Every structure is written in C-alpha cells, then in structure tokens.
Amino acid sequence: MLHGKTALVTGSTSGIGLGIAQQLARQGAHIVMNGFGEYAAAQQAIESLGVQTLYHGADMSKPAEIEAMMQAAAARFGKVDILVNNAGIQHVAAVQDFPVERWDAVMAINLSSAFHTSRLALPAMLQANWGRIINIASAHGLVGSAHKSAYVAAKHGLVGLTKVTALETATTGITCNAICPGWVLTPLVQKQVDAKAAELKISDAEAKKLLLGEKQPSMQFTSPEELGDLAVYLCSESARNVRGVAWQVDGGWTAQ
Ligand code: NAD
Image 1 (cartoon, protein in one colour):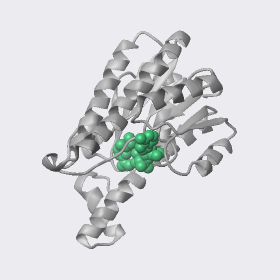
Image 2: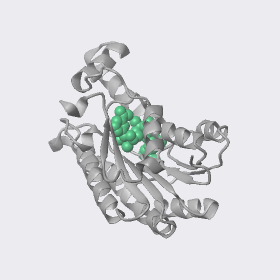
Image 3: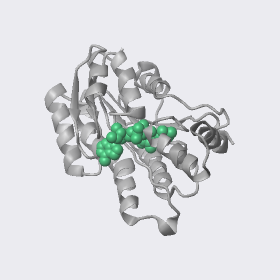
Image 4: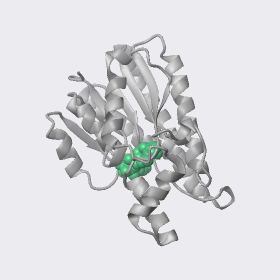
C-alpha cells in the first residue's frame, strides 16, 4: 500500500515510534529513523522487511539538527511523504518544583519539534499534493494529570497544532491527525512503573495494575504495533477525509 513512499518517524529507536515504523515498513514505505541510544538492531529489524532505511541522530530539541535531518531525508529519498512526530519525553513534578530546564526540554521535544519538522516537510508535500502528518499526542493531549504540567501542556499544544495544520491543508491531498494513546508499555512508561514499585515497595506486576487502575478502564496496555496499524489506516486513501482528529486509543481513559 505504501510502496514508493518515505516515512520519517522521530524517536523510532524504541517504543511506539519503532512499532509505527515497523508497521509502515510492512506496507512498503522506506523509513527515516531517528532517536537516541542503540539503533542498529531496530534498523536491521526494519530493513529485514524489505525496505530501505536512513538513520539520523538529530536531537529533536535543536532546530538546526532537525533541519539537517530533513535535508538528509530529502537527499536520500527525494522527499518525506509521511511524517510521524513521535519523539517525546516525560518529567514528573509539581508546578512549583518543576525544573525550568525540564519544562523547556519537554516543550522543545514534545511540541516545537513537530512544528519544525512539519514546516520543513510541507513544501514538498504541497508540491506533490499528497502527504500524511501524524502527531503522537496522548490522552494527556485531552485531559490532565497532576504533576505532568509540561507534558500535558505540550500534548494539548500538539493537538492544537494538528488542528491548524489540518485546516491549512484541508483542500489538498495532505492530512494531519493526532493519535492519543493511553498507557502503552514502553521504556518511557516502565520508568514510571519502576518509580511506583520503588516508592510503594510493591512488585512490578502490582505497580502495573495500580498504574492502569488509576486511569485505564480496560486494565490493558495498548501495544506499539496496534498504534502502528492506526497510523497505516491514516496513511490509506480511505482516510483521505479524516482531518484534524485527536484519535484516542486509551482503553476508555478519556471516556470517563
Ligand atoms: P520511549 O522513551 O520508548 O521512546 C521515545 C523515543 O524518543 C526514543 O526513540 C528516544 O530516543 C526518542 N527521543 C527522546 N528524546 C529525543 C530527542 N531529544 N531527540 C530525538 N529523539 C528523542 O517512549 P514512548 O513511550 O515510545 O513514547 C513515544 C511517544 O508516545 C512520546 O511522544 C510519548 O509522549 C507518546 N506517548 C506514550 C505513551 C505511553 O504510554 N508510552 C502514551 C501516550 C503518548
């Protein structure tokens, strides 16, 4: 379905980004990978699906590095047809204790980076009159939780950016939508499970149950592959008129 297309997925060395990159590759899209840490195994897993990859280690908090990544993607594949803004970090603290440097980092990585990649990808998408921009927001793009001020503000902002980008491209072949996951068991969430287990001196399984029980009525984690399948749908021609939505995959979290 996506043969001949190129998808750039930020933060695709692990977790949700990797799951989405894999599902897009299964549909034939070449993948531009990005993110920190060990990436060779992830890159190999994607290439084994028969597509080409390019890895770029741009720090998504740095606009100049984002520009270099977008240029490298265009140089290798011509243009980016599918942009998945996924890189994100979390920091948990009360507003009055929130370290200013962490606030700035969460805003830069979870929100401003999507503005930069979008503004740089859009000219070629407009020229081709085809494109897909998928912003990985969160249930926290729709509702709040205590101690997550920067994350919740950034994700609400990302949902806003999604709507405006969708409106500005509404008469074109480009769509922009957000996916709003609840709990997905990735390294980002495992850290929060570990913190809870340590704080309350409980087991990993008990901490997971507690985390789910607070927010997610289904009591089940979503998998990165399930989110990848939704991204594949949003890239399909059937989804050409799905524009500006913030699509929950949250086990009922925001239905409460
Ligand atoms: P993760 O920690 O497993 O992966 C995050 C990815 O972003 C990694 O590849 C990491 O290297 C990359 N990254 C972090 N900082 C970066 C930077 N400065 N520059 C470039 N890459 C950077 O996390 P995840 O759970 O897979 O989260 C992915 C996205 O999904 C995030 O935007 C997160 O907010 C969102 N999300 C996650 C959940 C969840 O339950 N896991 C729920 C809702 C939304």
